[in-house]
Length: 119
Image (spheres, rainbow, N blue to C red):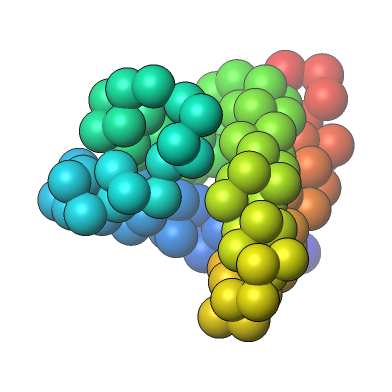
């Protein structure tokens, strides 16, 4: 059972690491997704990429996993409410997949954090 938890933790961390790298590789393209009421555009894309990679590393090495899980869930929920939900409300049904993905990742991050509440 312990191996299953380890595998699950690695599999859960992988998308965060990949998304983080993608933020660095496509920062200018992603800057358009930053809500217009937030100044800084590409700065936030780089910062988000860094936080996603840091979360993935934390999940894999099991250091500060509780805090990383809580902060990652919060970040995913910020994406849900500031990027994807306005898109869905505006009629972009393609945004629904991203909304559900980020909502699921937020839930997974909270579940992971709950397993590390004492660290």
